[in-house]
Structure formats: structure tokens, C-alpha cells
Image (cartoon, rainbow, N blue to C red; front, side, top):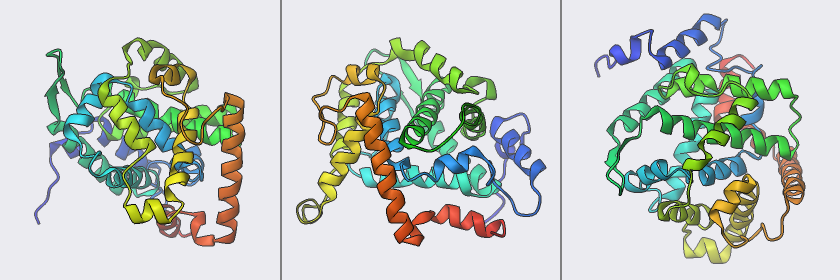
Amino acid sequence: MGDTTGPADTDPTLPHVAAGAAVRRRVRGGDPGLFGPESVTWRVHSDPLMGVAGLRALLLQALHPVAIHAVDEHSGYREDPWGRLARTAEYVGVTTYGSSTEAMLAGSRVRAVHARVRGTMPDGVEYAADDPQLLAWVHCCLVASFLEIVTRGGLALTGAEQDRYVAEQVSAAMLVGLEPDEVPHDRAGIVDYFSVIRPVLDVTPAARRAASVVVAPPMPASVALMTPALPAWAGIAGLAFAALPPWARRLYALPELPGAAGLTDAATTVALKTMRTALKGVQAVVPPLREGPHQRAARLRLGG
């Protein structure tokens, strides 16, 4: 194969190229990737509650009518929800723990997909998946959900460390083509962002379809009937729903979900702490579960 590098991969004025250059300037020895082992991002993204956090992010993202319409029209998530979840987890893993080159390639692939997604809303308004406003929405839902779930679950982060996490994630935003000034740089910025965008949000039919897949994804009958996978998933998804902001739960106006019945915000926090403790216990007994493949590869790359 020939060289696939083009202007879009080398122009230093583009956000994703600038992000990669910043990484390379600070590399000493092994390539730490976008963040490196001393980052708050590595601590947050290695937390055992990241699965719950990811589901919360999906439920939150579905509340943007344009974003979820684009997903509904152009994604095969309903036919292959597990594949969609796996690809999202893979992207987060690569951009968190991969080398700077691997992270930039992952971002390039996402930008290429977004560049092809164009459509028209039912009211005739045209949309594009690489619209900075849509990209910022997805970004903020991820950052807010990851930070909210792991800290409520018990990961000890100071206020300054939480702000640092949000600031570190600006590099992730730049990977998909956003400018640094198009996303928040601290927790206050995240709060302000959601306050401003809330009037735009709504539960459309597409949002309800997405939420139903998150809560009850299709499973083979043998798995659903012969294993505890279905009730276990329902509990995790119910906890993710219960951990949404109150205004988001009110928008959905859903009946209480399995695993979330009667949970107050305080009870949800207790449930998250309990789940995290249980998962930590499993990791202690089964060492291979203490770190994922991307984290393990990064440790080896850096000589750990």
C-alpha cells in the first residue's frame, strides 16, 4: 500500500494535527500517547465503573434530536448493538492508552466516517455529523458521564484533578476535529454547557428507540434464558439511567427501570459504590481483569 498521508493529516493548523504534535514534543523514551500514565485520564478510564458510565453517556447523547436522528438514520446500532458498543469501547481504549500515532489514526477514521454522514431532519433542516455543535455534544456527554460515575462510585479525585481531567479531554476533542475553544476546559464549563443546551434537548421517537436498545439489547435466547446476563445487564442499565441528571430523567419520563426502582440520587450513589467495590473484589481475585488489553499494551510500551 502507498502512503495514505495527505494534507488533512499534516496541516499543523488543524486541531487533530496540533494535538499529535503536542504529544510528540513531550515524549521521552516510549510514546505515552495523548495522556500518559501520570494523567487523570488514565485513572478515570481504568475504573471498573466505566461500563456504567458509557451507558449513561449513550442515554444522555440520545436526548439531542439532531444527533440521535443522525445515529438512527446512518448507524446499524439496532441490528448490532454489541458491535457498536465494542467499537466505542475500542476507540476509547486506543485514544486513551494507544501511542500518539494510534490515537491519531483512530481519530482520522472517525473523522472520515463523520464526513460521509449527511442528512435532512423531518422539518427540512440539513445536518452533518461533523458539525462542531454535534461533536461538542457527544464529547461533553462522554466527559461528564465518565467523571460523574467514577467519582460517585468512589474514585478519589480532588476538585483540581477533576478539572484537570476535563482539560485533558480537550485533546480527545481535537482528535475528532474540534478546536480547543469549542469544548469546556473545566467542570464549571461542563455545567454551563449543559445549562445552555438544555432547551434544545427532547425525547424523540429515535431517542426512545435508542434508550430501549441500551436498556434491553437483543440477546440470543440461550444467553437470555440460560445465563444471568439479561438481569445483570438490566441492573447495570437501570443504574446508568438512575445516574442521569434529574432533568434528563424527567425528559425521558420513563417508568422505573429494572434495577433502578425507587432509587433516589443518594441510593444511586450507594449502589455505584457497592458495584465498584464488588468489581474491585473480582479484579483482586482474577489478576488479568485488573487492566484491559490497551492499558497492558501501553504499560509494556513504556517499559512497565
